[in-house]
Image 1: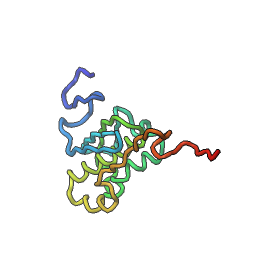
Image 2 (image 1 turned 30 degrees about the horizontal axis):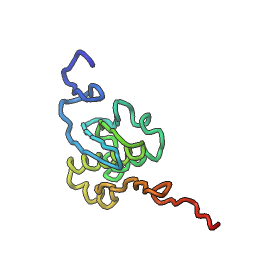
Image 3 (image 1 turned 90 degrees about the vertical axis):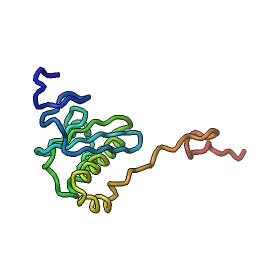
Image 4 (image 1 turned 90 degrees about the horizontal axis):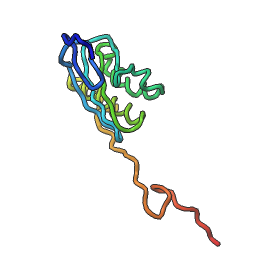
Length: 148
């Protein structure tokens, strides 16, 4: 960590530049992933677990999924976003970040809610991996049937 603690915030991923309090927060969940999202006024820089979001999400679909709430509400480039995400895989984490960004945008301005609700971003995606059942090789797959 740095010696100069003036005008910085300590988090699990290191020091964050800017004021001591975020202007909006949101917690997003998807599958086994949980994302804590913090907004500050800025230039649109997105930092996920201390890395840039292009570096953290190499797949273009994950990046597009994560940025879609900003595109719908026409708020691209207005906020610096700091995200702590853990659990699950990259797809689940991208969905959790999108859900957290959506909740933070709604906390910032309630007028964003109808647009985000119509796109289906407000509701948590409750789908999870189905458990494996005994007597089968997977959740739904059956062993091969042999007539003779």
